[in-house]
Length: 142
Image (cartoon, rainbow, N blue to C red):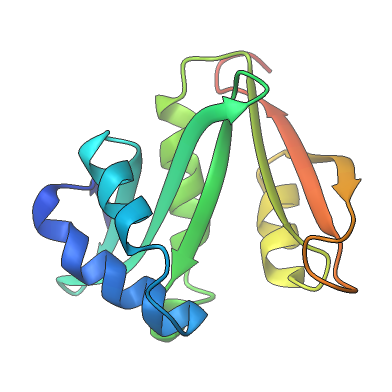
């Protein structure tokens, strides 16, 4: 697996993968902007886009991993872990946050395996499926 900064040339494949995973292309503009702002990393396996992750600094002034999307073909092969580790190494801040739905046991396990701890919960984003907020000191600050 190779993980790298997303480039403009990755936008089409990232948008296609996102639409495949969520069932629509509603985040295409957002993804293109994240790539342009250098706030997206991509993972490749066998020269194919296996996944991507997006982060920003809009969570109360702290870094927040907004999206981790993995092609279903490459799930359970360390792609999400690799993407999050890459962001952990890039973030120049004291704190790093992310979140996932309570129903997403795989992502909860990834977060916890990387040293994230549950920090809070947000109700009512997805009906009946609370969003769990996770926190971790940024790399080098543990």
